[in-house]
Length: 81
Image (cartoon, rainbow, N blue to C red):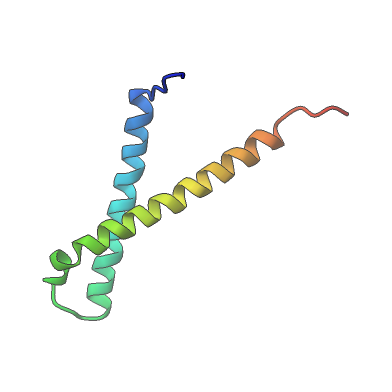
């Protein structure tokens, strides 16, 4: 069986995307706290929800990145005419 190796550059890239999703989830949480005028204690108490939301954002981002890559790959491919 062949070994799979993931480059350090790819790992850093994916960690940056995940960090961006986590920041987006935190911003979304802060917006909800301000919008619904709740206690700022919810910023800490709902941290588990923020992590789950960040993972959902990341999975959606992976889906759309993969879809975009497939579209680009097949649209720029030289077909037989």
